[in-house]
Amino acid sequence: LTRIKLGLQKNLYLGNLNSLRDWGHAKDFVEAQWLMLQQEKPEDFVIATGKQITVREFITMSARELGIELEWKGSDVDETATVIAVNNTNKTPAVNVGDILVQIDPKYFRPAEVETLLGDPTKAKEKLGWVPKITVEEMASEMVAADLEKARQHALLGKHGFNVSVSTEH
Image 1 (cartoon, rainbow, N blue to C red):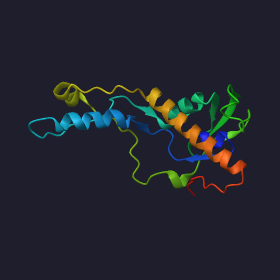
Image 2 (tube, helix red, strand yellow):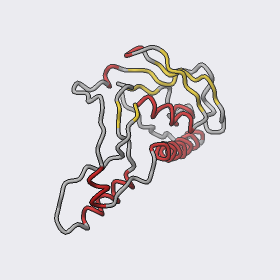
Image 3 (cartoon, rainbow, N blue to C red):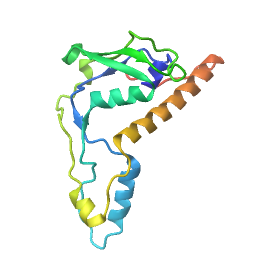
């Protein structure tokens, strides 16, 4: 989303926005791995948050981190996210009310789509004492901040004549 906001990319194209995912942070998962390695006997553990939200909710949350309010319209391949408010133009100078930021592209639908992914971390909590510390909201905030910084760097380099490749998928 950040590359769109700074005018480096026009739109974000996605597949199934209804997919439910168990969003967890790598820092938490690495801690769980370390705890597993401390065990006398190897065992299998499910490392997950035990909570899930849709891809659409994650996008909405990320947009809010940038001060953007979205309105979702349509359904299936005709669904879009349109900007209805911009509350922080310092972070998003290229975004205007009425811009369509998210569109659906059928090529991003997975043939064997799993609609819901949810892990049960009960065993890891009981045997390892592990619980995730970073919420999905904190993770989204961290991801947006990192993307925003990278997008600002690309915009600055581009402004000074450097041809900077912005990764996009086609």
